[in-house]
Every structure is written in structure tokens, then in C-alpha cells.
Amino acid sequence: MTAREKTDVDLLGPVRLSECGSWATTDGTPFGPVSDVRCPDTTHCLNLAPCEDGRIGAHDRNHTGRCRWIGSTVLDDRHTIARGRLFIIGDVIGVRPEVVSYE
Ligand SMILES: [Zn+2]
Image (spheres, rainbow, N blue to C red):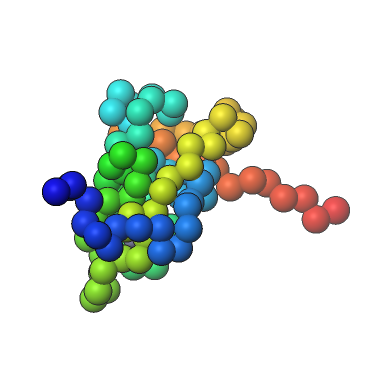
């Protein structure tokens, strides 16, 4: 038996780390091994979710039912994020929104 439940599959497709917007690493550096990610369901999942074997693990939410992002593959696209957009608060690494000019 594996640790992953049968239902832990990519129901919503893979998600890129840059889309998650924030994550934590085991060594506290922006490019270290990812331990937790911000769930893409930012309405109902308010805290970081564990990232296990490159997938979003089970996590608490403020809504009934199971989060559909559980089991989704997390694609590591950190190398595409400009260094100036990364910031660290405590144990969490975040990505500042891109500045868009409408001129
Ligand atoms: Zn979630």
C-alpha cells in the first residue's frame, strides 16, 4: 500500500510553483527542496499545504469537503521567476505580482 490515497490524482491538472505564489523549503532558501506550497484554492485553503513527492498533500480548509487540488502535481518553475520578485517572510518564500504597465 502506498501512502498516497487512490483519489490523490491530478483532478485539476498540474500547477506551477509560480502560480501557487508562495512555498516553504526544507532549508529555508528560495531554491531549496520544497516542503510546502500555497494551495491554488486561495478562497478555501488559507495555509500552506504539504508538498509530498512533488504533489499537494492533504491540508485543512475553511470549507466542507476535500480540496480538489490534493494530489495535483507541482511543477517547479522557480528558475523562470525573476530574482527581484522573490521575497522571504519567516519560513515562507513568496512571489511579488508582476508590475503591469498599461501605458
Ligand atoms: Zn486546497
